[in-house]
Amino acid sequence: SYNLFTWLYAAILIPSALWLPLVYISVEQSSQAWLWVVRLALVVVGAASLGLLIALLKVRPQKAGLVYWLAVAKKYGTKLAVDDVNFNVNGGEIFGFLGPNGAGKTTTLKVAVGLLQPTLGTVRVCGSDIQKQQLEAKAASGFVPDEPNLFAKLTGRELLRFVGDLYGLDPAQAARRSEELLRLFGLSEAADDTTDSYSHGMQQKTSLAAALVHDPKVLI
Image (cartoon, rainbow, N blue to C red):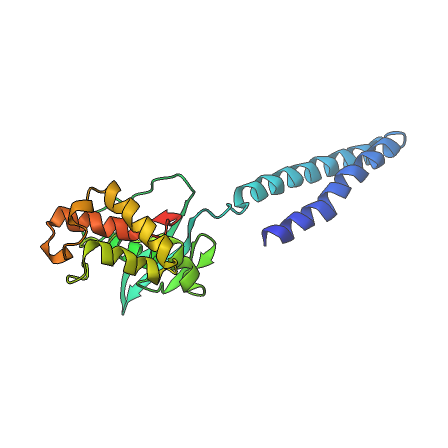
C-alpha cells in the first residue's frame, strides 16, 4: 500500500504542482476572478500534497531488523496470552521485556524461537519467517531457557559437540568451537564430567555455551 500511495503522489500531485503555476501565470494576465480561483486551487493542491507527503513519511515501512515482529498475537484456546506485539531489534542492540507474572514474556520468547507458533502476525529472525522458514530462523538464533535442562549423561564437551552437530557444523569446527567456549566459561577442567554432576551455575554456563556453539546472529 505504501508503494501504491507513493506512485499516486508522484503521478498525480507532483505533475499538478508543476502544471498549476503555469496556469497561474497565464491567468494572471486575464480576469481577476479567474486569478483568485487559480490561487485557491494552488492552495488546496499544495495543502493536499503536503498532507499526503507527511502521511507517507509516517507510514513508511521500517526496515526489518534481526528480530522483527508485526501485529503478533498468541491464544491458548480462548485465552489471549500475547496481544498485538510489535517490535524491531537491530544488530548490536540489547532488547529486554519487563512485566508482571502472566504478562506474556515467556510466551513471547517461545514464539520468537519457534517453540510456539503465533496465532496471528509475522515473526522474522534474520529475515526468515518463523512459520514458513523454521529451520533457517532457528539456525540464525541461539536460545538459553530459564532452566538449563541439559542431557544429564553427556559430558560438557560431548554436549557442545552434539549441539554443534545439530546445527550442521563439521566435526572439526564443532570440536574447535567447543574448546573455545569451554575455556571462555571456565569449564575446561570439568569438560569430561557428566553435566548432572555440575553445579547449577555450571549448568547455566553450559547452556549458554551450547546456545553460542554455532555463532548465532541472535541470542535469546
